Image (cartoon, rainbow, N blue to C red):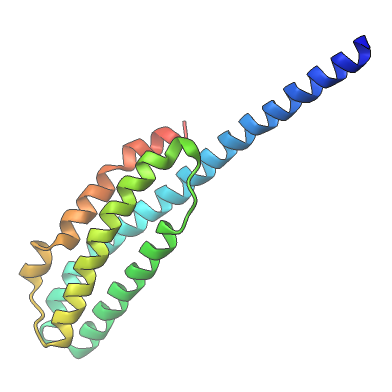
Length: 147
C-alpha cells in the first residue's frame, strides 16, 4: 500500500511539474511571437510614412503602399488568432484591441487610396499611428513575460 501511495504521489508531482514546465514554455514561446510581432509593427511604422509620401506622385510607390497595408492586415489577423498562455491573456487582449483600431485605420486609409486621396499627413495623424504607438508601448510588458 505504501508503494502505491508513493507511486501515486510521484505521478501527481511529475504531472503537475510537466504542466508548470509547459506553462513556462508557452509563455516564452508567446513572448517570442509577440516580440516578433511588435518588431513587425515598428518596421511597418518606419516604412509606411515614406511610402505614403512617395505614393502621392508615384504609381509604383502607391502599389507598394497598398501591398504593405494589406500585409500588415494579414499580420494582425495572424497575431490575433494566437492562443496566449494564461499568464499573457491580459497583454494579448490589449494588443488585440489595439490591432482592431490599427486594422480599422488601415482599411480606412486603403479606401482613401482607392478614392485617390493619398494624404501622408492624414496617415501620421490617423488611428494607424496611434495604435502603433500603443502596441509598441507594450513591448516592455511582453519582454517581462520572457523573463
